[in-house]
Image 1: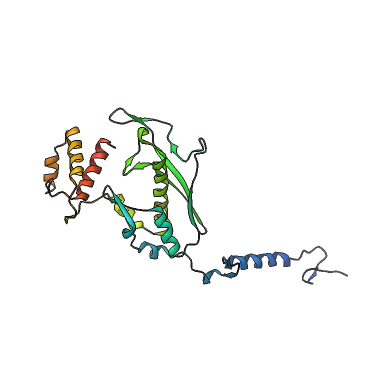
Image 2: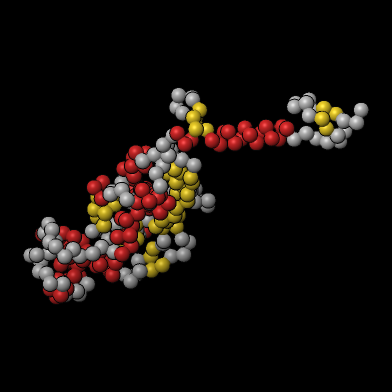
Length: 254
């Protein structure tokens, strides 16, 4: 007898030959599992039959502006609304979680080196890092901790700003990888624009803050406003926000 029989499939083998039927069976099972998804009721169905997350092109066309809130002339999409929109457009699993600093174990990361601003105040660079999961996709995103559009300083750091940084990071990560809300970030990177058409006028309190900051830093506010073809009486809320952002960025005011 010059051959042996495989006990699994009955194939005739040479004396030293090993049958590959079990390897082939395992590969077939893995292929089948990759094509199926388990529903909440326990049934297995083809993945093609289940609604999946829409494409980048489709998600980028969704108008999210109606869900946004505005601060300093820039629109923000709430993280919870972002998750809701993803589920409405085919996502099954969506969440994010902080990646702690490996040294401190804190959600807040900071530079070891200090820097001194123009007012002689010592500060550090603060960041957060999160893991974002959407169905089978996992992304890592790191972002600075900001107060509006300004970096947070040592004397104004708190847990709410750390949380806001992670939420902002999540929404930005989703925009980059799925397209949802991407146009919001295009506008932010370009900076807030002064609208050509008047909208709601700036509040007296907003104008007073700008005038006080101008006086504090030796800026001729009247000339600044006039050079843009405006007056304090015709300045809109968005235009006032742009001026306030410019002052904060130039002089580091909170």
